[in-house]
Length: 406
Image (cartoon, rainbow, N blue to C red; front, side, top):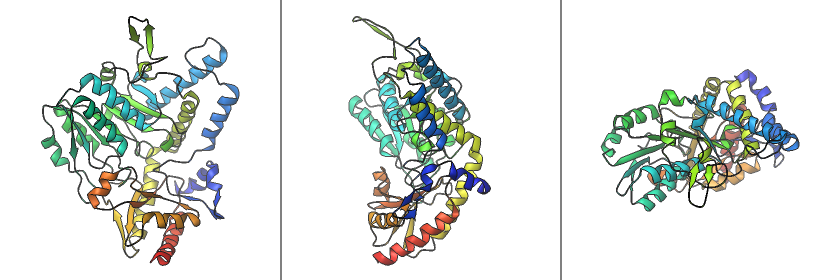
């Protein structure tokens, strides 16, 4: 894939930007990825030529936009190998997907004193909605810990499971540590006790081939903006037999079959979970992003990004007083680190002056920081359009920053 990088980079116009008179080096891909021209052009084209509310009109524009949206649903289904398009719910992103399941599954299946398991390394979006559910229902949140290498202590999972356990929710990949979690093993353990599993795939679907049938997960969610698509888009997969039993998350247009003041009946899947006018044009553009990734090949993407990760890890470890936070054996292209006596935001601000974009802070994963007894980290996260030369420039610049701040 190395031979393709120059061509790939021309597909992303923002990569030609200069920041503080320096070429942009964008290492903040775990927060959001940049968009290829085909995604940008699709948004412009549909707003310019085909904009009309979907599913509700008999005229040409509405029919055209409706057909394109449902084709996008098929692209999303194929991308994660779901059984049917009815199992694909479009959301505004992983955060909404978690909230949808926490509310709808919770209203249907969770009772007082029931238990929900999450892991210690979860993003706030995969903690807070479950906490809110526990508060509403009088349920109990259990936590699967991780060790100092940043690996989940899977051996402790069977000890957490009991007759009151109703669902397990865990990240496929940690946004703060880069750990690729053994979700197949987690799902197998859970299913032995007939417990459904929700997988937060926000940091995985754009890096790793996801096959929900092979995984046998009950729910899987990912965000469009982290997968080279528009913001405000996301995909929630749920097994049909579970989704059919769940009460709707939001009420309004589209999610209904028939409304009267006496009674409302709900639409069929997936529409009963898609109340109101959807973000249909961005969803159509998301399908273009997923096709772009598919055409490049996720296996090639994973291999190249792993090479970037390994190279950057080796180079960063050469820097005195730098400590990597999270050194799991199985990682995605994320490196979090701290440097003695240097505040992450100070280093991040100076790196920005050199055109380098990194993320600093807690990364919406405060329990991870509490585990290590730190206030935050610097985080670099790579995408397939990044290069080894950018890593060299970053490491050289970081060393210069250290010399200024120490």
